[in-house]
Image (cartoon, rainbow, N blue to C red):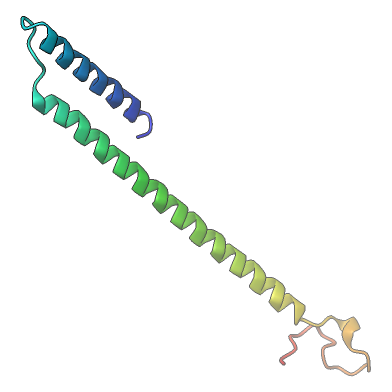
Length: 103
């Protein structure tokens, strides 16, 4: 879509130049109004579509990023509450097998 906007802008400039030339020289046929409106409406629609799709991509990118961050934080948080065999100071079996410690 970004590549088509310069082409449409060039077509709009050519349309305006031909309208100005037709106004200056009465022997030339002026361009139709529908052609100019079609170019402007296509530019508007493509700009709105481009903006909407970019915003949608940013939204989903942030949504996925936040989800991955939350998963990573939860894994780290869960990992911190898993006791290793070296953590039991009194030598009891609590936590000696690497099970989770419920607080």
